[in-house]
Length: 219
Ligand SMILES: [Zn+2]
Image (cartoon, rainbow, N blue to C red):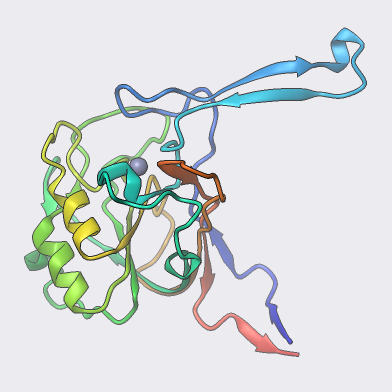
């Protein structure tokens, strides 16, 4: 039997609220009350509306390719397992290239990049860092199957070609966007970031957490 040691996990998901910054064109979060105690109802019940690309989320291949699968059929192995957090320090708007990772060894199948270029999840800005097709090809060669970052997209905000998304599709990688990694050291962790099983959805919010490397103990 395996159990997780207490207090060894790090939350890497931003809080979601109507204030959460959304990609231009996306629908912000709203919780519309359907039943309320103040109105004499026996329950509080609300309807949730938002595009599924808010906060920490997993894109499904159907988001960036007409033949891509939806999030419900995506293999969970992508989102569960050993991962490596890498810090990068780039100019505003710059894409991460393999050159930026000089001296770093890729030693996990999941890699999360901390750019610190989208510092406030409630304040939109379009000069965040993103990935590059060159980086994705290079990571694929190192057997990486999931890439994640602390910005709203793996391509620049105003990019229309979506080269990184396309490279991710070509290499059948999974992607996590909108993470919060400010408080996370470089190193190895166990990632848990499971998408909801929403049929035909183009993405799903995830509650992404990192467990300290080798958190599993036998009992
Ligand atoms: Zn997305």
